Amino acid sequence: MKVWKIRVIHGPNLNLLGVREPGVYGSTTLDGINQQLQCLADDEKVEIDFFQSNSEGALIDYIHQAYREEVDGLLINPGGYTHTSIALRDAISGVSIPAIEVHLSNVHARESFRHMSYIAPVCVGQICGFGAVGYQMALQGLLNCLRG
Ligand code: DQA
Image (cartoon, protein in one colour):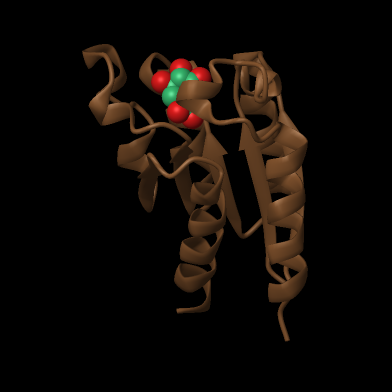
């Protein structure tokens, strides 16, 4: 049976989860989110790895590396780059790996500059507003797509 290879990509400032605006982003740390995903990945018998960077270029390099490593699917919270980065969008569309965009907060209920995502149009879908649980929903959704 095929073991799906999933990569989880956390963008800028998400390393601050737990201390960063807990009223908006919740109190779960990034390690906590990754541990929850690791448990779900173990249950689902899929391989999962995690990456966080505050640098746009490092995020793009990681996506290219995922292509070389024949990764099957991506979960990505691009943080503030969601609303600014054509280069990150081009990296995702360039590798043609199915991706799901995740946000802890409901970006559509916040400032208007957060309503637009450069990333969402090149993703399978977007999950936002469910806090840390949204990542688990995204992993379930991604596996559902991959398994067909
Ligand atoms: C975020 C939403 C973005 O607008 C913001 O810049 C973030 C976090 C979220 O998870 O809700 O850094 O991606």
